Image 1 (tube, rainbow, N blue to C red):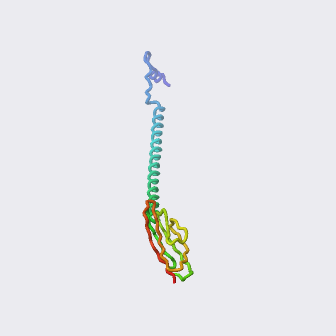
Image 2 (spheres, one colour; image 1 turned 120 degrees about the horizontal axis):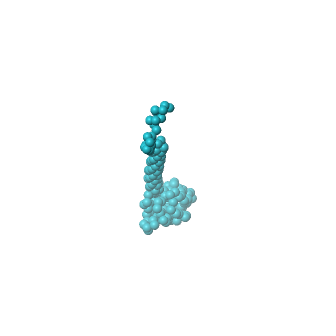
Image 3 (cartoon, helix red, strand yellow; image 1 turned 45 degrees about the horizontal axis):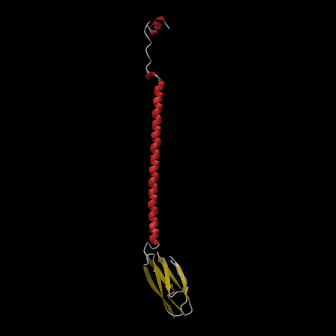
Length: 161
């Protein structure tokens, strides 16, 4: 280094060296950059978490609605909420003396079931058949009673030759 350059760079006597600006420190810039990246990463993670939560809620709500619709369709298929005799029939409709036939019934929302004339135990069922062997042409009356006390009756005849 030349003597002139050394002289120029040396502080004059009585003068203090100029303070260094904090903006010249690379640590300030790198700390600011790391903080910006950290804030961005936290923002991305938070928004993805919220998006996934909303998607799960939407999917659950859609599945619940679909399950309710399927349940309503099943209830309707099984007779709905009304007290009803959905089916009462004999097969075959005519028999010879001493032969038997099947008396079948299908009821919904019944609390009690009675059959007149009685031919066996009866109870609420969606598919129940009884073997019957009448000696003469007989009309069977199926009566169901709901929990509220309402009754519904239906008849079917079995012919005997």
